[in-house]
Each structure stands twice: as C-alpha cells, then as structure tokens.
Amino acid sequence: MSVEDLLRELAPQVLAALVRRHGVFDSCEDAVQEALIAAALQWPDEGVPENPGGWLHTVATRKLVDQIRSDTARRRREDALATPQSALLGAAPDVVDHDDSLALLFLCCHPALSGPSKIALTLRAVGGLTTAQIAAAFLVPEATMAQRISRAKQSIRGLALAMPEEQHEVRLAEVRHVLYLIFNEGYTATGGADLTAPELSTEAIRLTRMLHRLVPDDAETAGLLALMLLTDARRPARTGPHGELIPLAEQNRAVWNRELIAEGIELISRTLPRGQAGPYQLQAAIAAVHDEAADAENTDWPQILALYDILEQFGPNPVVTLNRAVAVAEVHGPATALELLETLESDKRTARHHRLLATRAHLLERLGQHEAAAEAYREAARRTTSAPERRYLTDQAKRLGGR
Image (tube, rainbow, N blue to C red; front, side, top):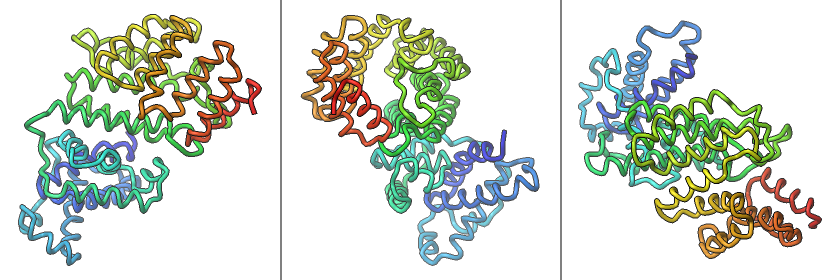
C-alpha cells in the first residue's frame, strides 16, 4: 500500500478518534489535515512509522493544541470544549484502537445538512480530498466549495460523534445515497468539458468498500458496491480518444475491466440469495446482465425488463421509468416504449431533462421518424450542460439530416 493510500485509509479513523475525544469537528478536521500533510512530507523520506495511526493521532492532537493556544477565537471556543485543556495536553493514545469511521460517515451525512453539503463534507472529512480537488470535480470555484464546507461544519457543531440510536437503517440509507451521488457525478459529470470525473468514482468506490467492511451483513450496501464496480468497469470504453461519448451498444467490450466485473458479479451473486432484494441489489443485477453479454445484440433484455419491473415496485422513480422504457423498446418495440415516456413528459422532474429527450429521439429514429428524431436530439443537446453529451447529441441530429 502506498503512503497516499495508507493516509487516506487512516484519515477517517484518526479524525473520528479526535472528534470523539475532543468534540469541535472543524478544529479536529483542520488538525488532521495538517497531520496528513506532515506525514505526506515526512514518511516518504524517513519511512512509515511502526504505528502510523498512533503517529497521526499524536501529531493531530498537537496541532489541535497549537490551534487553541495561538488563536484567540479558538481560545474562547476552548471554554466550550467538553474536554479541559489539561486533558488535551495529556498524552495522546499510542494507537487508534477503535474505528469510529461509520459514526463519522453518519455525522457527515447528518439530516441537518443539505445534499450538496453532505457530499462536500464526506469527501473532505472521510475521503481526505482537498477543498480544491472537490471544487474542481464539481466545477465550482474553490472559494464557493470552501464556504459550503465551512457552513456544513457550522451546521454540525456541537453534535456528538455517535451511532444513531434511532432510525439507524434510515441514516444508513442516507449514507449510501450520498456515496451513490458521488459515484454518479464521477461516472457522468453533470457539466464541463469531460464526460467523467474518475477521481470521484474511485473515491466513492473506496468509501463504499469501507462502509461494506463496517456493515458486512447489510445486503443493500453490498448491492451498492457491486453496482458501482459493475458500472465503473465500463468506464474505459465510454469515451473515444478525443473524449467523445460512446454509447453502451457501441462500446468495445474488450477494454471493460474484467476484474471489477468478476468482483461485482461475485458480490451480487452472494448477496441476492439472502432474501428480498433492495433497489441497489436489483440495479447491480441489471448491470451484471449488461456486463455478461458478449455484445449488445446478445444482451438478455427480457431478464433486464423483468428486473426493472421489480425495481419499479419500490415506488415511483422517473430515472427507473426512463431506463425501463429502453428495456421495453428492446423487448416490445419502440412504439410501446414511447407511450411510457408520455408519463415522464408531464413530470416536472424529468420533463425538461435532456436524457428524456435523447431517449425519445432514439425511439423515434428506430420508428423511422427521422425529422422528429433530429429535432429531439437538437433539443436534448441544447439542454445538457455536458460538452461531450452536447457534441454527441448534435452529431446524431446532423446524421439524420438535421441542421
């Protein structure tokens, strides 16, 4: 394991230990960041200490004390600390003997925070990404992201680092949802010049692996990890040499990551037989069917449609309905699928979304209605904020003889 990987593995454990002992999340987080920087500078030359977790904890504690001593405002905050300064200045434990990473994830995904704040704080505090890295991934100025993270820290000030005694499953579901949002933003960026932001997908997978280790018996967490692995396996084939979008049916499957596919299939195969499958497990099963097909023509669409039928039973979800319509088109024809899209065209969540228009254009093209398809492609291109998607949709319109 590289020094960088080791630091990212230990960072949430050290932060959680500090927050549990001293409170004041923001000061603890600053102290841990400084300790990580010190380790990144020192360890490559001097070697990794025998107890790297204890080393980080000791240095971070000293940094925390330095902050309190040197900053007047933080001296006032010191009075509010549950732990007196004498205790702070006492010997830090040699080892981080209790992993509070799950409690830290719950804190970063606290209901008091907005969705974007949960994502930002999770990536910063648990993922160890810098503010600049997070800002770049979400295409916002660094100052904007810094403010967002600062507000998030303020919102959870005073909250104890503890496992929720009530609604544990609900809070765990929120953690999974935040990790899934991070993954999706990495797999298909909502805007910008690049189709993907691989660092976000990679980080989401790493954090979900950690969550899976913390709750190994939770089937939906296993399903989420399998879904990420099976989806990310296709990333090498999603773009051409110039970053152009390549749709699933046209991808070179020889460059799909077979190790990730094997791991994802093994995971979901072990999880599904446990009982009633949840949404993440079902989506992982769908991804597995795609990944196991030798080519697009040999995809088992009836099985995919059957899985979407079950998935829809968990409640209305326009994204699921849109994806199911694609499966319906393959099994029952594009005309039937177009009828399904009508319900989404009156749904304010999807009515103006470019993916709905792009799907509609594809179905119209299959029906031979090229002029209407070209217009739908053009409208979809106008509404997307992703440059690769805009170029792809515009090219489809031109291919059909549009403007």
